[in-house]
Length: 220
Image (tube, rainbow, N blue to C red; front, side, top):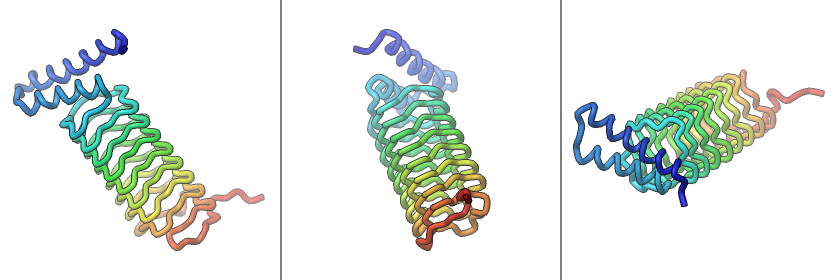
């Protein structure tokens, strides 16, 4: 049984969402559908093919949710908890997920173009084939993440922790990896065209050509 506090929280957030549309003078069936999808998600943590673009739900707890094929374009989810959630083919283009908890998430084939993921914790997640073109991942925790064949063209990975990350076949063209920690990361067959790796920790990382780097390893 859900607590009274949780029920009130669901109602309050959903009501605020509906009110925001009314304030803008929008009362179409599409927006009503959005509000219904949000309430369903908050109450049951599941909403397949949800239309939730533009929602403002900073700090919301959506742990262990199912959001496959959900539309969350330009949504504001800063500080949200989405740990252990499944979001295959989800559309987060232009969304704010800064400082969010994304540990152990499945974002396979998801669209994360230009998403703000600064300070996010996505440790031990599976983001295979995800599109993170021009995404901001500065200071993010990407330890043990799987980014196999992911698109990271022009992504900002400054000071990101990618220890033990799998970047097999990933496209990192033009990405910023200044200060990034790639200790034991797998970059086999990755595209690192126009990427400056001179200021990244590559200790024992497997490079695109299959060779193991010692750059950044402590010398004793």
